[in-house]
Image 1 (cartoon, rainbow, N blue to C red):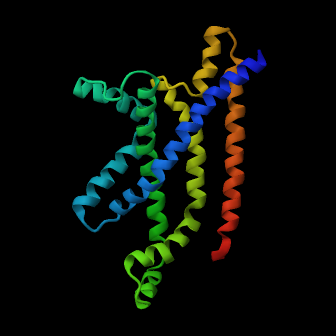
Image 2 (cartoon, one colour):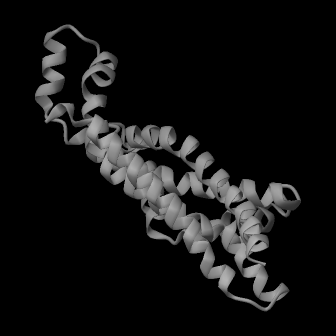
Length: 218
């Protein structure tokens, strides 16, 4: 029984990891673009970007998942995500990417704005373009400053993936709950915590090593 439960939960955890990895893959660069929009001097760009960030950060991720999956069908009277597991997973992925992009954008914005203006001026004196200043001088310092908050959000993402079950994405919590109905046992649901703890522990060690390697600005 224990081996069967472990294998079943591991299969669900693979879906969890897939959602986790794809969310990071898309939300990290998108968050940087959104941060540029939120810092734009053009009000027509800055205002709507700041409004979207406010809405996303001010509403529960579970609600966003439900709106993302069911909203298009209610408004357009059509299933834009397609049928089956693939459609539900795609809706969950889009919701997660939008949510975490907004959170990452605020971390990026805080890191970029924390760099003294003298750094930009020094680059201009050296004849560097704004593009060169950002990617050769500013970005390295920003990365050093944002690793701790970014790592915290990423570890939070590991646990937030469990919310995808509200639209029937078969991640590890869903698989753990299935044993309650199929076998009348609840311990597999608690057993899922071991998978989360191990994965979060590995990420904690990884980010600790990254922080050590980025200690060159001390």
